[in-house]
Image (cartoon, rainbow, N blue to C red; front, side, top):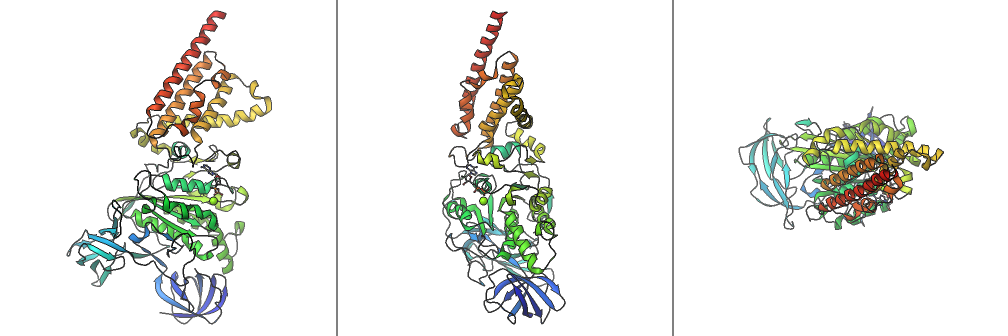
Amino acid sequence: MSIASIRWISGPVLRAVAAGPFALREAVRVGPRALLGEVVRLDGDEIVVQVYEDTTGMRPGIEVHGTGLPLAIPLGPGLLGNIFDGLLRPLSGSDSQFVQPGAHRAEAGLFAFAPRVKTGDTLAPGAIVGDATRAAAAAGERSQAVLAPPDVAGEVLAVAAPGDQREDATVCTVRLADGTVRELSMRHDWPVRVPRPVARRLPAAVPLVTGQRIIDCLFPVAQGGKAAVPGGFGTGKTVLLEALAKGCSADVIVYLGCGERGNEMAGVLEEFPQLTDSKTGRPLMERTVIIANTSNMPVAAREASIYSAITVAEYFRDQGLSVALMADSTSRWAEALREVSGRFGELPGEGGYPAYLSSRIADFYERAAIVETLAGGIGSVTVIGAISPPSGDFSEPVTSHTKRYVKALWALDVKRAQARFYPAIHPLQSYAEDAGTFAPWWTAQGNSQWLPLRRRFLTLLDDEARLERMARIIGKDALPVRQQLTLLCAGLVNEAFLRQSAFSPIDRVCAPGRQSAMMRLLGRFIDLAEGAVAAGLHTDRIARMACMRPLQRMGEEIGDGELPRFAELQAAMEREFAELTQRTEGSDAAHG
Ligand code: ADP
Ligand code: MG
């Protein structure tokens, strides 16, 4: 392999005079500690290298060794349940935030391998070779598919018998079309910056169920879709992403902590290993991969971590699973890009970011998709990226470029957060482009009114903003009674439906059935209230109704398993309205 000699070095970037050929994106090893780097530019006889580890002590004259291979990460059954740095080197638990310099890959774990192919079979690219179950698996732990690499096809010459194998031991030998023989283990390397191939992309039609009412009902994201969560400091990005990781309907969660301070990741690193998955009763970590590249870890590795995370997500997608990737925060990733670009001496663009910021953001979100996999299954990667705009200004470059590529935006609002109204997603600044596509899915869940109710809620919230502006000028009591009713109903939708504490044992996740029951109940309330006002009842009287308080509190008080209680609440509400309107009509008659 080729060797180069460092001529110049600045932080994570070095230039070296090459004594042989290097390839773009080739992985290199720098100096006696064999620090991991990647060739990012070829410049005459010089190579420019981005180094993913702390370069303290490196100086001109030190050697850089080529590896002849692109920078790649190992993908295998050992990923689930573990915590890695930005280049997928293992971080063992919350205390060790650093990997050994030069350390390359995870220890190969022991897995029970069960073959799905036999000698003589033709192996197609990305096909399923067998299944792997952790050798030390607890009862009920799911197996994982063992995939042939997407770039390998040929005739199976030999396959291991069922039994325990190290993750890196040969389990299948294949003769390729050109006659060469490849040995496959349960894991394979894949270059981080290259999207993994698929048979074809499918149209998004099914929502990722997040368990958050404001998302699922007002601003849903598709399985295989992309959403961004911009929000200033303390508006609830991390809490929301964690809530989604714990409660969403994906089979596998890839959680990327990117450039946030170590203590902000503490929640994930310490809490996740102790959580139980409410749907299966199994440890949440069994279907989770955490990638942590905190602010005290090398900046270039942070730039790479977003690609590692999406590559890992694609690897599980290729097993026919639905995967959700949470990235907290893409702004810190963009800052790493900016810092490395500055060291290259590139001309800064808008906000100091390199001119290719936008295309890099696009490349990342573009990898979200629902697909037919090479193995013939259906898998998806849904990407949810947090954005931390400096001083909460959504017009800055990362937010504005991201908005061009995502389908759903969940904009966190400082005022709502300050009022401790969580999740602080602003209903008027947020959007979901695909919402209409999900109506058939909701109908299949027994809620054919989902789309009209959604529209009704959104209109109400829109009217509320307008009327509040007016009320500030002329006073609320001066508004016509119908507009006062709009304010009352919008207030109820906010309080009873959109508000949802991530820390409430009952309400932190809300299943679609309960979401539908709550939506319908509120829709019915609005109908009855409009009828009552038309019949002459004053809104103040409606505000004082006995059913108001249970309605406002229903999210906290009625759980997913207690849907009949919504019918009881509705019956009480109907009775109360009936009595009130009768009385009103009665008094009208008396006056008449
Ligand atoms: P950010 O990551 O945007 O800086 P955090 O997610 O750390 O903000 O949220 C800050 C605080 O706001 C949390 O510690 C928590 O007290 C509160 N909070 C945020 N979101 C919620 C939520 N959905 N439910 C309850 N409390 C929340
Ligand atoms: Mg945060």
